[in-house]
Length: 428
Ligand SMILES: NC(=O)c1ccc[n+]([C@@H]2O[C@H](COP(=O)([O-])OP(=O)(O)OC[C@H]3O[C@@H](n4cnc5c(N)ncnc54)[C@H](OP(=O)(O)O)[C@@H]3O)[C@@H](O)[C@H]2O)c1
Image (cartoon, rainbow, N blue to C red):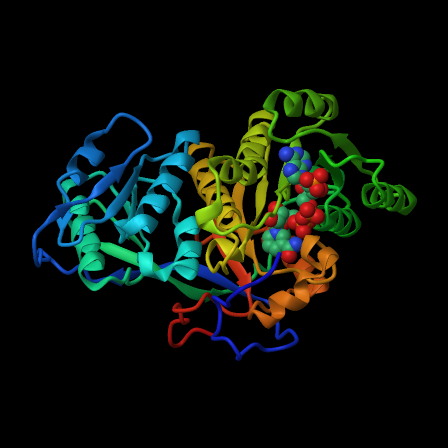
């Protein structure tokens, strides 16, 4: 995939080499909401897109009007299949003269796609608003949307508004890797999805060597392909105990069936969720199927594993997300969305299935292993401003992140945080 613009530093300022992996914790930063923004000129109603029969939220938004009009996609609290079409229909409508484009949702997400669109078509002023379902939140959302309509700029780009109408964007606080050892013992079963992929197999081997755990590799890659065959042979030759289960992780029934065999004698202790696919494509050329295909291994895959494992016996769930969900370049809208939806799914599980330590690690690009290294994308990424993660420091970080106890359930692993989010003064 070609990297077209840097979200991390201005063009021409690319730095070569690596300077060390840092941990960044997403932190709310207050956003001032301009109140009661007046409509200048003849008001035109906004066009509303919604995936189902208009609910209360969509009905309220149908009263929005501004001088040039605008487009708003209203999504619910979960990203269902129809949400993909709604979002892309709204993008197309905004592109045909219906800007600005606002996404209003109560938890479904979609900001990864809009963030990418901001790089591809800033004139659409894409603005993503996540709101609590309250009158105060909706009033603040309206004022933020009308400000975008008046100024032609989306301002912060992504804002969350709580039930009291208080608005926040994301800034980044420097964190640290845990010092305590991972809560795993020799012999523990660790499911690694995408386990024959570049990072999955490398991480599995590292954990087996360092912690003595037994990796259970789940992957749908044809084991007779040269890469998969080579990794399986190398694992066998190492003498490390492991199990390989060929399965499509999005098939919940099949995942339960294959895991039943290995979990008869002991439960799964940890999940390292690496299954995923990357494909490029400008947002305005994407189809709903593209969004769903990339999201499936990440989101449905994680759901399938969680429904097959016993959450009371699980100690850790570590999901491999991407910096591109937070700082995309042009052409990665579907992948950015898939990784945002993965993070939201991990957050949902942390709320609804307590027990394990949950974490989404949003990695910068890896050098030395993984699809970017294998396809030669690392050099291009470096030129575009992403500082690659050296294999040794990435693997050491994975091991330590298994012990993550918070704050929060996601961290960004990158030399620097995304553009526009400078670390707070006084941070190390
Ligand atoms: N490499 C990086 O620099 C980087 C950076 C940030 C985040 N990540 C994330 O880290 C994870 C691992 O990346 P990677 O570089 O190791 O990629 P990779 O080499 O492509 O490995 C991913 C593996 O997941 C498998 N997979 C995809 N869909 C599946 C499904 N439905 N069921 C079972 N297996 C499935 C793939 O099989 P097929 O190839 O046959 O589809 C592949 O073997 C990905 O989620 C990626 O998004 C990677």
